[in-house]
Length: 223
Image (tube, rainbow, N blue to C red; front, side, top):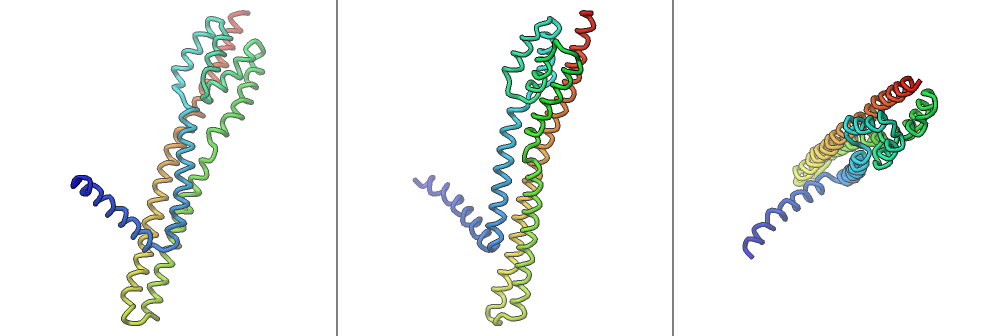
């Protein structure tokens, strides 16, 4: 029982410290927290989606190449159909026209890529917006706190001046700190997710060209 009380004590103290930190920061703290929450939700949704759209491109292409070289195009299409990732979907569009001219295969790949790539990059730009908004609201809270502090020096009763001045400084510092923490964390998420999206898009470009070359080589060997 004593162990449980000992464990709960620091947790409650931490919760109280956070609550006091937010309360001293004033109304802008709530706005920053809401913006931060929205950014976090977007980041987690994108992380989950990009994990599904990503795969080991070189390994997948090696497997696909074996089917194409053995002239089993339907087998290659089945391999692509077995994945929800972006690369297989794009390559599948080209494989469905493997018996047509290379130009038509290229058109099919391009059309599918134009459909898939926007889904990879979806909502990533919002993360930059959230980071900027967090920073600006932090700055706005800082200015509001400084105005409050200067007003205290100029107008407050001498007995209350120190308390009001302290409250204004606390509001300025707390909103600045929370705004920066929110912006930095969202920017880190944006960087990670953008790198992941760029990797998926680069693999689509690279292996689409390799598939076209592979199919072109097969057609030339048949002739």
